[in-house]
Length: 330
Image (tube, rainbow, N blue to C red; front, top):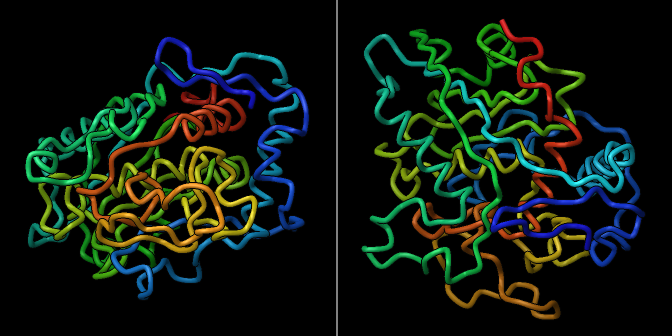
């Protein structure tokens, strides 16, 4: 492995050969050119509710994204890679004229606090712990990814069409509202319907389509929202993981290379709720990563990222987002 932990914070060294992540990549499907991908989080893994025209990444799409990452890391070979000191965040609150979706400043800041707790390796929801939720993050080997988030701006737009029809208008919305460059995280909140919780772009697609880069989440998934089982803020945690390059833990099922992360066990399909002792790939080592932020489990069940997920996020940051926070700023 090419990564290492530095003073408790995930860091990485750019790979010096194609053997990096060899145990997960050796059987990867050949890649092909494909349209930009979008990874979503839904309330029911078997239900509808995905972004129009978009589903889960195919094995070929995932392989292509991984190949792009390896290509971009070549010039950084041997360098020590670090996460940014902070990631600037702009939250775009889109609401209806009757007040629906008008997320308060207090809830927006609570979302930032949840992100910082999640990405630092500590449980983000003490209430879930005290209520008998999943094990504390320290007990499941949670990693400090090194990423921290700082709210720099909140924009507010009142528009009934945008609020209830975000997907219909999303290209226009994001092109008009987006702030900053590749290193600025833009989060959009709106009504996404009953089944869809959120979705995100990948860092590999920023260069060709910068106006559309960012994370979209249902307004009622922010902390204090009324989306049952999904109102602790971990939809944003999950989608930002995609924004930083991670795939779902169940990517490729039980087939190599899985999610391209060595320390997340293989998982045949998404988890829902918070099942205990689940092992959908019994021929592979380890039980399913039910409590990982990149699964589909309930918010109260989610506890952590792994060390190798943190290293992979750092690699994506160095390859696609580092040094671009101010590029294209208004």
